Length: 305
Ligand SMILES: Nc1ncnc2c1ncn2[C@@H]1O[C@H](COP(=O)(O)OP(=O)(O)OP(=O)(O)O)[C@@H](O)[C@H]1O
Image (cartoon, rainbow, N blue to C red):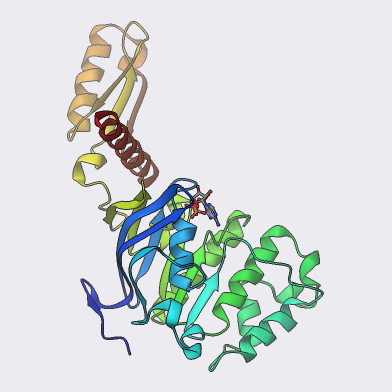
């Protein structure tokens, strides 16, 4: 059924020109995405950028206005019933799970799938074994989120959509989650996740895309996002007057050597420039820079109208 061949081989998700307007607010202005089978893709963007809207269109629970959407080669809106069992969904918020326990819920969701994972295996994968018999409503926020993830993966989906999956997780749970996702990815699962944690995107994603102003404004591997220029190290120090100085340079060692020589000449204690630090911009710095640049560009375009 899936014969769509994208830039990275066969596509798990292939979207072009997706637009969506709520009332008078145009949220998506032409989203293009091509996620390969087996790829893990992190969709980043500020609050309200339209990440959940995009994912909901891919899940077939929301209708885009225009554009072409194919998930596993099929239009989610007209997909046959068996397509659903090939797609796993972890929405941003889950409804009331009633009086049931994780074991019962995982068992029930698994019974709807053609080749489900075992209930104990799933409980173990999401770290809920010790809470398998508690009522879902009595679980902590982080434990309920783990249960959401469990219900999304029990059917052994080929494509997994995760909308802010680790919100509310403690650091240990996030690391366990990352290991679990790495395992699913190694099994060949295609994964699209949204997250506000840039370390999570760097850890998990083969590629990241930045959604801003209704479009994907940057897309690359986490190591290459924003280009080489954005990764130039930044040297910060206080000058002899105590004022903060900052310089971006490809040769931080050379600059530091010069600053040390100047500090010695000025007779500073130990010949050390005060407050000296050399930093390579993190993925978060680069992401924030891309968002700020896009907002400035859009404001300028708006002002010219
Ligand atoms: N059903 C709806 N009706 C009207 N407006 C909506 C609806 N759903 C979302 N919106 C609006 O569309 C915009 C995008 O929302 P969306 O939830 O897709 O963003 P998001 O990138 O997922 O944000 P967040 O990071 O906060 O989860 C927001 O301004 C939101 O208020």
